Length: 91
Image: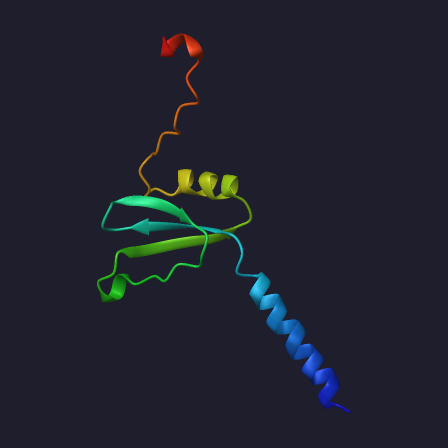
């Protein structure tokens, strides 16, 4: 009888871990010298010669990740793309 509650607890714990993987991370890419926002937990591999040398997160929304990227000193400032041009400029 004790195995049934134990199995239930294991299922709940596994399901919670699966849902915890969602979010956004800010990673520094050594090859491009840029910071990118990704949707999967990054593997930091700078010790073995990889390109990802730092990662922060997870952040709940893309806006939170963009705000975090703007506060990291290693990340170059990336201007936001301009909004769609008005019809006057197209002519």
